[in-house]
Every structure is written in structure tokens, then in C-alpha cells.
Amino acid sequence: MTIEQLVARKGTEVYSIQPNACISDAAKLMNENHIGALMVLNENQNIEGIVSERDILRQFVLAKENIHNMLVKDLMTPKKKLIVSNKDNDLRYVMSIMTENNIRHIPIVEGETLVALISIRDIIKFLLENAEYEKELLTEYLSGTDLD
Image 1 (tube, rainbow, N blue to C red):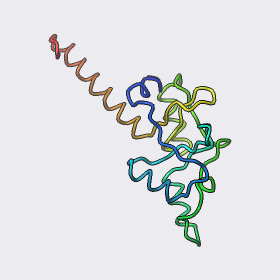
Image 2: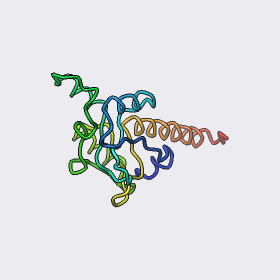
Image 3: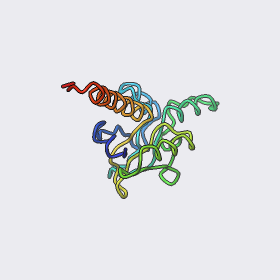
Image 4: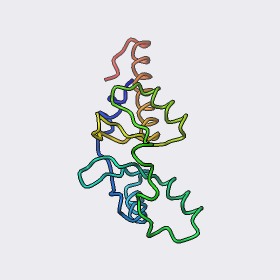
């Protein structure tokens, strides 16, 4: 299975924020949309980095000052450290990269263009849906009947 198959099912909607936005705005946007990360894009929609709820929580614990007025660019993982995938990568490969690097989100890019953002939750949902479909096919095959 490829990332392209997952993206085709999940969709390409990506929530984003600009680097000079307040971190409190990022937290609010994540909370409102029930997501764990935002892509950080500049005014030209170019990737600057990613900011996750983990980044905010880590800073909250470490900060000696109020973090509400901190900027996204101060907490984000910058583009040069960003781990990305393309749509042609195998799903197992991407899962292993995410596990090895202890990340829950990975941007999907074509060249320098952001195509999608997938989470470990997206991957699990995709795998469970595929497992259910395979179960139905095997049941149909073994019983010799159509399950339409």
C-alpha cells in the first residue's frame, strides 16, 4: 500500500498557520479542529515548518514565562529539520520512519509543494478499513457467495 492510496481516501485538506502567529492561536485552531499539528506556511504558502500539540506542551512545561504570546516560529520544527514523505512511498516505510523518529505527523510533498499532512491516526484508520475489506473478501471467497 502506498501513501497515495491513503491520501486519496483521507483527502488533501491541511490546516496551517503562519510563522508569526501567536502560539495561543495555533493551540486554538488545533483544538477547534480536533487535530494535533499544523503546517507552518508563509504568505506564499511555502512550507516553513510544523508545530504540534507536543511542541506546545513541551514549551508549557519548560517555560518560566507565559507562552500565550510566543510565536509559532519560536516553537515549530523548522523546514530544515522536517521529515517528509512523497505519495509514492510505501505505507510501511512511512510508519517505520514515524516510529523511529517518534513523530505523529508527516507532511506529504511533491517537490517543494505540500500535498497533504497525515497522522498516525489516519494510518491506523486506513489499515483498519483495509482489514475489514479484506475480511469481507475472504468471507465471500470461502463461502462462495457475493456479499454485495
